[in-house]
Every structure is written in C-alpha cells, then in structure tokens.
Length: 146
Image (cartoon, rainbow, N blue to C red; front, side, top):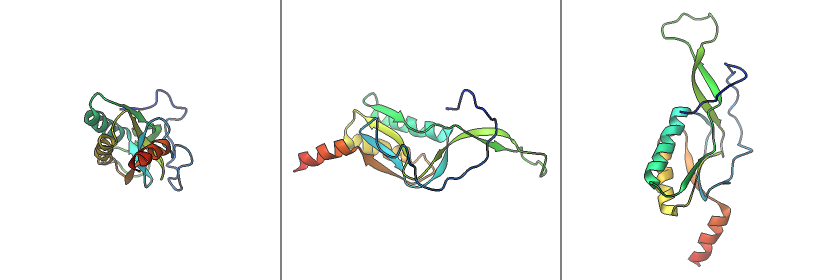
C-alpha cells in the first residue's frame, strides 16, 4: 500500500471535498480511464485493490497508470478512550478525489477488455465512477464504425 516517504506535518485538517476537479480530469497517459462521478476519500488499500483487479484482468497485456496518490493522513483515537486529550495518532492514508478526477488509466488493450477491467476496479472503490475514452481514440473508433 502506498504512502508518502516524508511529510511536512504528521496530522492534517479534514479539508473540503466540494467542487469539481480542475486538474486530472481528462485521460492523459492511456486510452481508457476510470473517472470519479462524486467526491470521496479513497484509502491506499482501496487503490491497491482496484489496481490488482485491473492488472489481473488484463493479464500481461497493456499498461496501467494510477493518477491518484494517498498523501493525506487520517487520524484515529484508540477504542474506549474518553473525549478530549487531543487529536489521535495517524491511522491510514487517503487520496482526496473530487468529482471528475480520472483515477486510473489503461493503454495497450482492447476496449472490451478495458471496460471489464474498469468495472472490476470500480467495485473496489467507495464512489460512483464511469468509463471514459480519450478523445483521439474515440474519434478513431467512431470513424471505423462509419
């Protein structure tokens, strides 16, 4: 599971998940992508589970690119602890995903295989997602259909 090597501050505030993703909202590195339809915190374990689902489905063919990184620490207090006495210790790491963010990308596979792999990955994530195609690839596939 991924986490940063070093951070400037051990504990962070919760922040806001409102609004659209301004960067990372288009397919840049691959041909197909998995785009978030709502905002959420995605843990490093969920990212790894989705990555495994994709790579196992496409077997040895193709490339997978992960566009999100869990760089936000989430704290948790021990069970059965009284209120007060400060903020808890860092428990796990999350990536803040806003609406429209492309989280995973794939290249070098057929569209049907990519669609199935993305569907398997989306089942591992805590938010609604959709399958997106790069504009240049979408233009080529529509030309072949005519």
